[in-house]
Image (cartoon, rainbow, N blue to C red; front, side, top):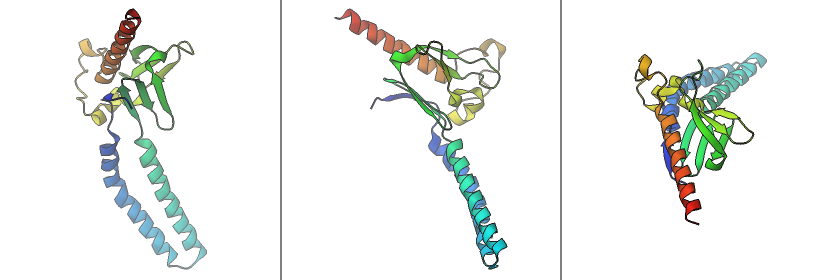
Length: 174
C-alpha cells in the first residue's frame, strides 16, 4: 500500500457532523413509526413501514453523500465519487488540469492517456468543497489568483512530476 501524499477530504468528520444532525431526526421518525404501530391497524403498520423506509433513505443519503474523496499517493490518484471509484495509476495519467467551468470551478481534472482525452473530474476538489477540506474559501476570490492552482491540483501535479522524474531516472540508469 502506497503512502498517501494528499487527501482532499477526511470523510470521518463530515460524517460525524452530519450524523449529529441526522441521528436525532432519524430517532424522532422511528419513534413516531413505533407509536403508529400501537394503533394496531393497517394504517399504523403502513405508517411504521414508511417511517422505517424514510430512516433507511436518510442513512443512505448520509453514507453516499459523504463518500467523495481525492487521494494522491506514490502509485497514482484515487477519485471517489458518490457511486463510483476511479483508481488511476500514474502510467495512465497524461496531464492534470484544473477545471474552469462554473459547477466544478477549481476542481482537479485528470486527463488519461487512453482512451485518448478522457477526463475525470474530482468532485471533492471543487471550490464548493473548500470548507470540507479545511481550506480558506476566500483565498482565491482575488481576480489575479482566480486561476491559480488549488492545493489538491497542486499536490497532484507535484506528485505526477515526481513520478515522471523517478521514471526518467530509472530509464537513464539502465
